[in-house]
Amino acid sequence: MLGITAAVLFFIAFLINAATISTNEVFSSTNFMLIGLAALALHVAGIGHGWAARGGRSRRR
Image 1 (tube, rainbow, N blue to C red):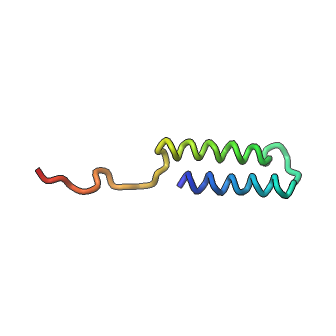
Image 2: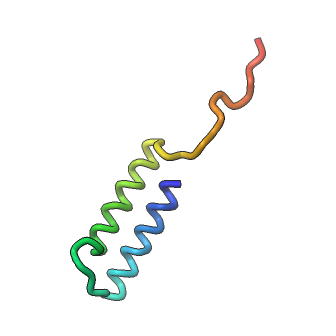
């Protein structure tokens, strides 16, 4: 889920930069890119991978 969030933030940063939209300091393309990089780093670290059952299949011994 964080990977998709990062992609959306990168796309918003690209649109702001490509359209040369004048924004304030909070909504600059650099800030969107940095937030996207943070979300991508969390995704690669394994945080926010969604809800999954632990253990998967049951083991028989």
